[in-house]
Length: 92
Image 1: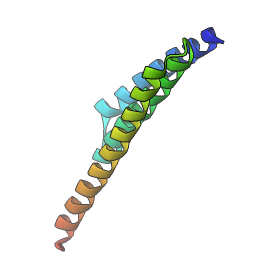
Image 2 (image 1 turned 90 degrees about the vertical axis):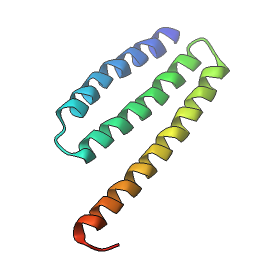
Image 3 (image 1 turned 60 degrees about the vertical axis):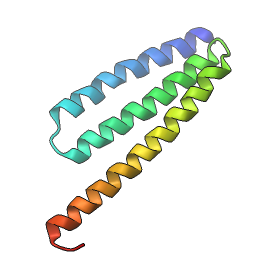
Image 4 (image 1 turned 120 degrees about the vertical axis):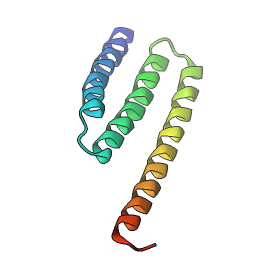
């Protein structure tokens, strides 16, 4: 079972390459933000898999902290994007 968890974690690390391509390529800020969210979600998944492989509770705690930080980052981006959109439309 440990080999399966480590294989899945490696697969998720390879998926981060696709996310990096999207961050570098763009074309919009929303695409880049969704890719950053992909990084956060994938990091949480990798840490959970690595925590389950040897049974480390500390990695599970770190995964929970990353999940909270990813949620806060998404809310911050949405608030900023919403404010920028209102500014462009001329309303506040």
